[in-house]
Length: 138
Image 1 (cartoon, one colour):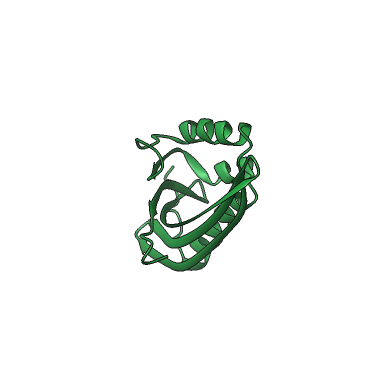
Image 2 (image 1 turned 90 degrees about the vertical axis):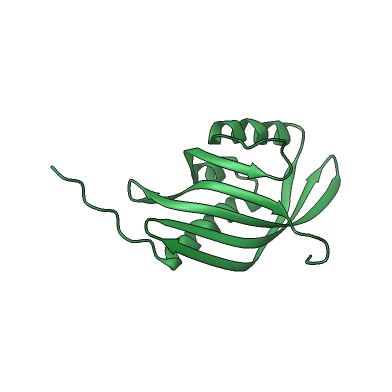
C-alpha cells in the first residue's frame, strides 16, 4: 500500500495556522500554543543562550515563566510574509508583544520566522526563530 502524497500548502492555510499559534500565545494558552508545534520543533530565541532543541525543552522554560507569574498582555502581528517551497512554508512577521510579571509590563518589537510543514494532514510548526528589531526600525 502506498501513502497518498500530502496536499500542497496554500497561503490561506499557512496564515490560519500562524494566526492560531499567535492567538494561543496572545492568551498565554500553553496547551493550544504548544499543540501548534511538532514535538521535534526547534526554537532559536535571542533571549536564550542556546537553541532549544525540542518542544519539551521550550515547554519546561515556559512553565518556569508562568510559574513565576509571567503572562502575555498583547501580541500584534504586522509585516507578514509567507514563502512556500515544496512542502514547507515560512511565515515571517514583525511582532509587538507586551508581557507582565509581578505587576510590571514589558514591551518588545521582534522579527519572527515560523517554519510550517504538514504532518499527518495537519499543518504544524517545526522551527521558530525570534530576533530583536533594532530601535531604528521599531
